[in-house]
Image (cartoon, rainbow, N blue to C red; front, side, top):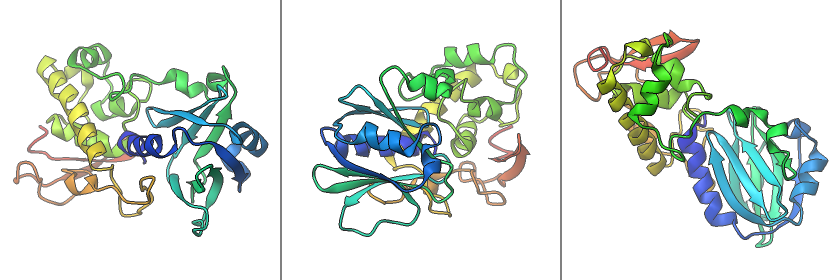
Length: 278
């Protein structure tokens, strides 16, 4: 958390607010945020540069600068990217502050300090962030269809949710949307993927696109810890639409008959309906 819908929500807002803006000044408040390079590298790489584009790959934000450099931002567990007037009080745990030429400040906030910011010179992105090269297709950028899923699953005995969360198979899905996608596809999350037939793969492909699109439209999911918010500081609302995630013991909101169960799958809490997902 945040997962693909949350990061895409931030990306879209950042594209509107920041493209064409010049970075006039930069402060780095904690070295850990710059652990792949250095605070000086962030300051030098951003200061004076103009933001030309804002892309996303899985859970990674990729901001292109007119210098040819790329800014990689990963929110990890508790990171937030916020924008506000420079005269407003900075929130706690504000680790990178970039003043834009319109007087606003772009702020990277991260209470748990797992998130990071990297400014890469042209050609250095995949050397400094090698995991980007190992990401599978992005279901929003690249699309995913039943044929793709059937190919990924063929001859594998891994369990369904484990495959969905494997970033080298499909990029961007995490625990929340893994639960919701399995439920929407009417497939048990612990089912071996080589047992899923063509119709099941088709339902799964549809569920991936539908759930992610709906979540993006709702601004993502903000859970009880309220650690995820959009660029404007506003929480997402898709958590109100969750059918099974974090609803153990409640009646299924889809069938109205099953009681949502919880199990541990690969050391992650996993939620499912025994009626809908046989």
